[in-house]
Image (cartoon, rainbow, N blue to C red):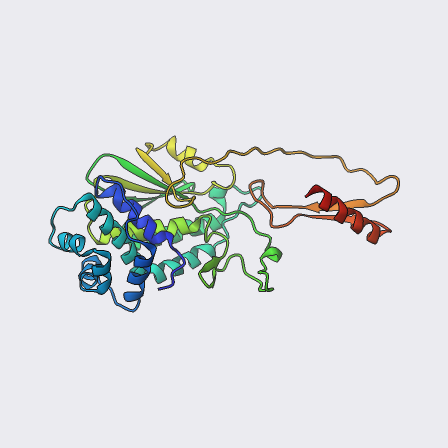
Length: 340
């Protein structure tokens, strides 16, 4: 099965390892073995995880990967070794990808279609598009039998209760960086709609497919599977969906001023397996008085770049007016070559 949301399996693995057991999860099933399992069951109608394991246990894939002992122990409700637990984690992630991969893709399409960008002069919590995505996420969460709470249109909280007192916070965000539609063109000339998911090969294009509406989707489906399979939860989970991560960053502080801070916090906005730090950045705002051009030479009439301070633009454009364009072009080309 060709499913571009590869984080779905990884997120299910991560949540299961934090919630149900105590040992750390390891990627002990190879990429080749995972691909073989996905291919074997790509056309199989799956009812639940135990049915998936029963079928897998009888296949050549399980024998080749030596998964039979872990599968048999789990199906017989026996205590699993740390290695067997890790194998079950991985298989649960693959099961989730097989059962809900297509549905998760459609959910992502629905969320990407909502243009949750910052509007100048409008607070995020008053922006109709954020109210719309909150209603959409609420409907999804409740259809998955998960608890939903809208904290003043600033943070959307989805809860999955466990037996203990500790809370694991999973952090994602619903806001996205602004777009310049005319720049959404592939090298072959294909024009893309930033707010429509386009799947080409194993890549998804669309604002938020990576940063970070996919995090909302994979977390919801991972929580759904844990709920459906009645996995024993040693901790409580709260999926916290931020609305200002790309801009002011004041939604999460607003939430924590009014709600307890989780014991553990993970942000699904980086690369797998774990990122424990990131570089900081600074923003310098400058303005210059406009003045009439004087003397000879080219005149700069406009300059454009990204649409947000945290956006790395695909291109920046400066427009220069001169009565000697060929001479100016040659001079700029030489300056560029000298700089590089």
